[in-house]
Image (cartoon, rainbow, N blue to C red; front, side, top):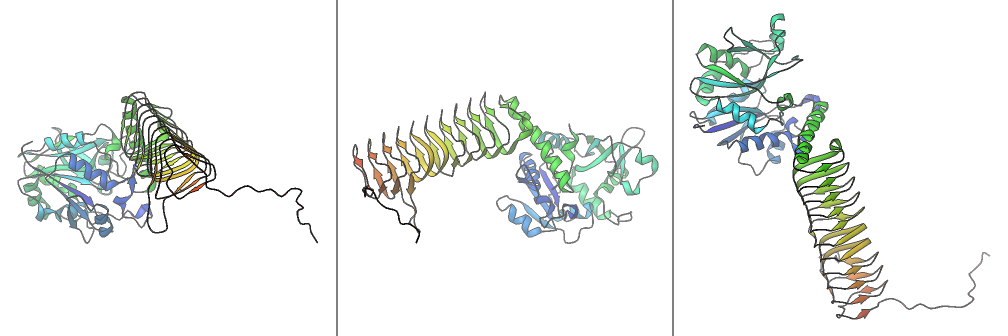
Amino acid sequence: MGMSLEVIVLAAGKGTRMKSALPKVLHRVAGRPMLGHVIDRATELNAQRIHVVIGHGAEKVRETFPDTALNWVMQTEQLGTGHAVAQALPDLDSAATVLVLYGDVPLTRTDTLDHLVDLVDDGHMALLTVHMDDPGGYGRIVRNTHGDIIRIVEQKDASAEHLEIHEVNTGILAVQAARLQEWLPRLSNQNAQGEYYLTDIIAMAAETGTRVRSAHPDHVYEVQGANDRQQLAELERWYQKRATAQLMREGAALIDPARVDIRGTVEVGEDVEIDVNVILEGRVILGAGARIGAQCTIRDSVIGAGSQVLENCVIDNARLGEQCSVGPFARLRPGTELEAGARIGNFVETKNARLGPASKVNHLTYVGDAQIGARSNIGAGTITCNYDGANKHQTQIGDDAFIGSNSSLVAPVKIGDGATVGAGSVIAKDVTAGALAVARGRQKELANWKRPGKK
């Protein structure tokens, strides 16, 4: 395609039927605002500029996308789609092709849009249409005897004959900017809704000798918008169906694809196994042969080859090497790194901690701001006391160390290679390599002691 591409995204609607304080386009599909999905598509098409027309909740919409190089266009009154697109006219490069998208239609594939844009040239504009079994509510595509599209009739303005048509308008179209600049100022609002319809430019195109080509998506869900929460949930299911199918094509075994939710990008090696009710968020990488147990949430993390995450774990911004085991019921917080063969058991929380190869933290333990060497064993109920109420401090444990159960390690503190800490100790000073440190009250006994009785 020789021409540069500019995209206009219509995102000014309120979404009354959502019954929500949140602007419509900020409702989420797969953990991302609908508008975010549309901006992603425009970015993948290498659009020179992306113009986003906003109105309801404009500030909130802008705040949600602070980093993207977007041209925000205000539509102060909502007078229809034609009026919305017209707001962006002054910012368009006349030589560009313009693609019009909708902030509440999140599942259109990039390929579908690419094909649509390719149909545009000096003599042609392009419209995305779809055939529906039940076309109720949609604008019908009217063609002449040669099969050319000559106009679109909205449901409210349609005759009985028009209502028989099953090919409908998706609203998504591509056209030269110069044509839009010529046609939009001529729109009229003489219709049942009293609005300026973008679709009226189709008739203008036919009158001025610009022919209208059409493209069709592979699936109807690609062009479906969400006006209420039920439709939003339907889009979510379609998204998930597509995402889980892709994982299975790449060699992952999903015990029940309907009970895995993907909210980001997931890379899988072969023979990855994912049990039910698993949520994968952000950027997740699962190495070959990794196994994820039921009810786990994994966010922005890497799980190495052959590692297993047992049921009911939450793993957030962590990295597991190969052949590690985590859980059940473990919480790995940001900055956790497990080297090959390390193990974390149940009711263990880690944060900003590195566990060396083959080290074990098996139960009921908190490890934060810590570096642990290889083959060390951290006993049940141990905690690193890393926070003094103002600052965080480091705990360093060497290789082959053994920390007895129910010990408190008061950071900053270092425990040398091969050192042992006796159970129930409060360790506030460094422990020398190879030594045994015990820090607890001595056990005393009073024989034949009489317990006080009631008076």
